[in-house]
Image 1 (cartoon, helix red, strand yellow):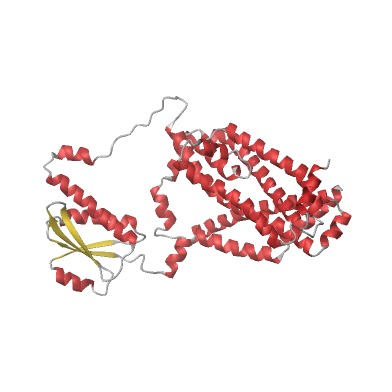
Image 2 (cartoon, rainbow, N blue to C red):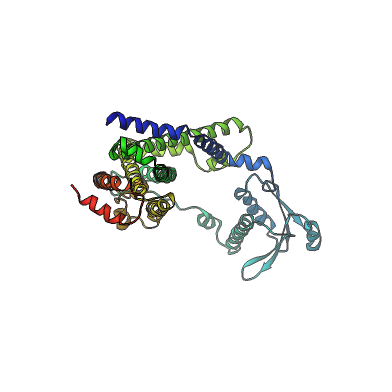
Length: 438
């Protein structure tokens, strides 16, 4: 029994690894991931007008040109590798002729008694939304500053109005700290990045088990296998082999991301890139310091094992369900229909992560975080963000473990009946009868 189980597990695993499509698919995935990590460099390589200088010509009929110009310079912060060149024009008609056939932007500023000034935004063709909104935002800021200056407010008072409010974050509970609060937010965002690949691996796991079992049933090879091996050994060999394969695929995805980062490091020389631009907005050293000072790292010693246990048990539950569903179907088309609700359940948890930010402290979301199959997506993010405690995760682990037990105890009986069944007639009746048997 044990030797047959090991043989089936090894055979199923090697069959997947030696498949030429496994190699082809991973080469494609490697290329895609490396491309995504370096997408900004690829876009820059092919070129385009996204990094051309933004030329803004201004006809000022108000005397506010210097204030407007000063604020328009901030437009560059919204753009990628583009400089903003601002030129003052004297005549409106001459300025219109200059922008004819070009991407230049002409702003005609006129006085407005009720709203300080008004602006005519003129171009020869369409302008992209980001650029347009950035210019409008800068003009609004200029208008507000000018209005404050024209209101005869004392300069010291004006400086106080413009100055940002000073906020001191305090907690009545002495065990709470600002760094811990910030670190929870950071780790919660990181958990969402981890959950998406897990969802993809779950989809891959369910479809792989279903395809393999239906392939054996469609070729009638199942009769030969079950004639020599027990249904129990066959069932668990599929589950174990598929989970090992998915785990290996997960490590490969991490390795591919590492290759992408290595390629970026080797090919990036001088200048700034998209990642550098993003990183410049966040002090990575400060983020690491916040996580360390927040005390979360000390708690990761028991948080990570709990999350890993939850992941393992949830993957097991999905694979057990996939095997049971595949055994009662007669072809892959039927299995695709049965697996749809299973995959929809896994998506629910992912979407509830976003809703949890809009409804902090929601009792409904906390309850759902305990539900098996959904908890794998929702619980890790809520735990790291502080929305739920370790007790909720432990409850989730107990419930998914209970589900695994039920699937193993009763699912195996259904598997024995369904695996050699090639007719849908009275199938459900046979399964219920099998479940009731001792």
